[in-house]
Image (cartoon, rainbow, N blue to C red):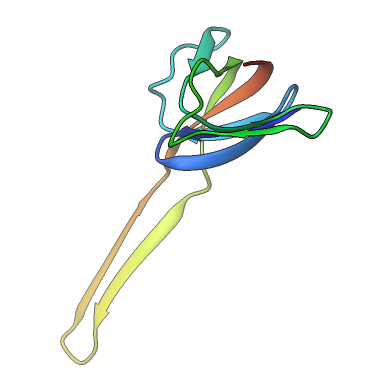
Length: 105
């Protein structure tokens, strides 16, 4: 059984036991439970597919928050040639890992 959910502006294909990485730390604390109600598609083991318009009514995906992390550092370098202008900035985006525990239809 798998589902396609929408979280943090992106779509994820999830199964029970899968680990997904969601942008930001706004889902909660580590060890807490989070549920996603924006389910776009659900497919069971028999091959029956239920697609929503845009979301499947009554469907919910439940997960447990694993760890709050940061991504790899990104460096942003700006330069204007022959003008002695160079700027270097960088950032590490926040990341939340969620382990999917249940898909409810």
